[in-house]
Amino acid sequence: MYQVYPRSFADGNGDGDGDLPGLRAHLPYLADLGVDGLWISPWFPSPLADGGYDVSDFCDIHPMFGTLADADAVLSEAHALGLRVIIDLVPNHTSDQHPWFLAALAAGPGSPERQRYFFRDGRGRDGAEPPNNWISAFGGSAWSRVTEPDGRPGQWYLHLFAPEQPDLDWSHPPVLDAFDDVLRFWFDRGVDGLRIDAAPAMAKKLGLPDADYGGVPEFRTVDWDDNPHWDVEEVHDIFRRWRAIADTYDGDRAFVAEAVVSTPERLAKYLRPDEMHTAFNFPYLKSPWDARALREVIDATLASFEPIGVPSTWVLTSHDEIRPVTRYGRATTSSFFITDGEGEESDLALGTRRARAAALLMLALPGGAYIYQGEELGLPNVDDLPDDVLQDPMFHRSGGALRGRDGCRVPIPWSGTSPPFGFSPPGVHPWLPQPESWAPLTVEAESSDPESTLSLYRAALRLRRSVDGLAGAPLGWRESPEGVLDFERANALRCVVNLGAPPVDLGGSDVLLSSLPLVDGRLPVDGAAWIRPTGPDPATAG
Ligand code: GLC
Image (cartoon, rainbow, N blue to C red; front, side, top):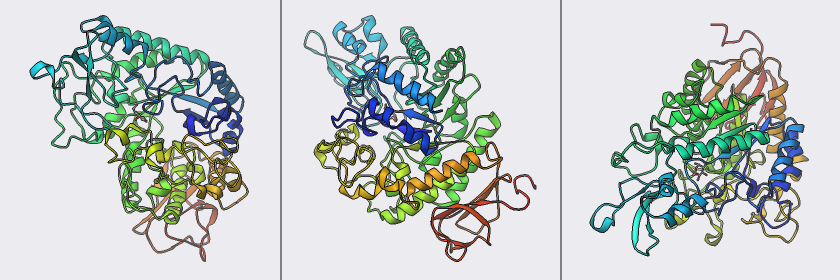
């Protein structure tokens, strides 16, 4: 699956922002790349306080991106090219400009309009303290105080993300009913599935008790076991209801959970047969560039997904994460919501070598893989965007202490030798500036270079489809030296990754693809190779 962040993918109308006509025009590129489908980040009307994850109408298209007719054209043309389309549903919160929230503000305390959200009186003198100690993912309290229609400071409302993203109360039946219609609206139009944003946030513990953050008030949801606003049991009732709706449709309609929870067992609950079909693999995404850590997370993933009959998924990055080329060139190679390793220098040549090897590793694993736009070009993060173009609430809410996620959202370079690199027409400034240094990283430049990262992804995706017996083949580890990952997918494919050992002798094997040139038949450090296996398969040989 290929993740499209529409504002940064391709600008069809020449205003500096990506849009659906731009996406439509580049669908053949995606078909040619060899992916099976797209996941499109939010395309709904939105004030863009959080890059579109603040939705003001769940059943329309942002005018910046186009119209519903453009969306229909994207769906039908993608389908004609054999590509499935998953869209991003953001159900935990609305925009503060959504008519429901504006009505709630206007209607005042105690009104039915306020029941769609979490409006509560404050604590302390004059209710001047937030109703509880919950924190926002973007820093600070998860509560903001409103001015009531009579002009006085009034109630507080909950926002686990930015203040412009008030949380909906999913225990309130009209909210559930309204979203049933949203699901049907998009399924009726032909979308093949929904990615469910911030899924574990949707249920809150009754009474909204204070959270125990274990002394570390940071939004590290992987560390939370019994938290009143994350991964609360009742969340599963919502997904059961949604699955029942999806199952009434013909063909496959899939849910993908964005669920960053503490253990594989808890994640598996989201994937029960009457809930979601699949989930992003955040432990894999977060893993450092380290053979032991990667092997552990691969084994843990397979162990938790296989018994429940759900395909594993693999992902290296997204619109929320540091781009792998930058990340793997730093001392800190793990990633969490872009913050790990922030500010560290990156050796981009090293990072590129590792990111290419990481791609071959990911694409050799059994299950589904997610590629984020620009990953296939080996784009680095843009860490030196000027402060005045930064839009991410992480940057603003942290008072500039965190740079935020704009650096991984810089528009795609398509062609030419200088910005805007065919993203927009010449002379137009894209919404985030592209670095001049991206000239060798355009789709055009990389298409004509057999050694490019784009050529590597194309070749790998082609082999993934064409190697006999690969689909569904189990993974079996082969014995390997410290620092090397070596596994076979039944008799179909062997993958060797050298993460820090001396060059690995591949013993004259039949190498189908490698991320670096072999030296005297040896795989250099930070390289990966796909090999046609010979002899018995360790997965089945016992
Ligand atoms: C998810 C999205 C992220 C967004 C957040 C709040 O984590 O991937 O971009 O900021 O939810 O909607």
